Image (cartoon, rainbow, N blue to C red; front, top):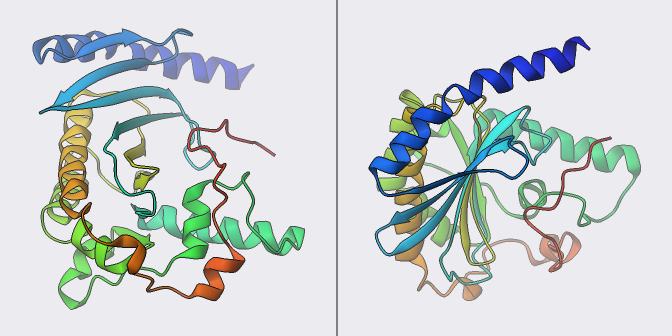
Length: 250
């Protein structure tokens, strides 16, 4: 009963911000609408010529408790371009959870019940930020199917935007995931209260991520086989996995 009351209070507190979000959307010619179950909202955004879907509501991932913000856009990226950036504390948490899952169950392969975020941490090499990137390396980690593509995606404007976001509205260690998957760019982060400043900062960060992804899309990703072929064979990502599959709770 106390948990239910607490959830209701959190929900009501969040809804108090919806009017501000709706006004912010209207001022920018975005299309705001409430979710069907009235537990969140959806905003259709235009970033230049690109359409972006912004959603706020109950988390779809176990590693984010409560509410989350999700942004995604179809970009037509190469299917093999699998890049992942996430907050450093979350990276450690998912690595530990992945290890425990396989040692407890004695599994020998990763199946579709495991989110891509966890599978990729096991499959792909970690990105090294180098001596000059120690500050941002303390905030985020990254892995990807191509070191070259990952480096070109992160370094420069995106790293600067992530650093700026971490100092302002989206202060880390908020659970934070930014990835390219099946031609899309996706951003997911924990956001209990949908504040306008946080939405604007997330949209700015997402816009830079999209532009950088579009910039590197012409790289011959399939030829950049820079990770262990043995590891990839053992932990290959199932093609049938769905990014927004319902989360499974134990």
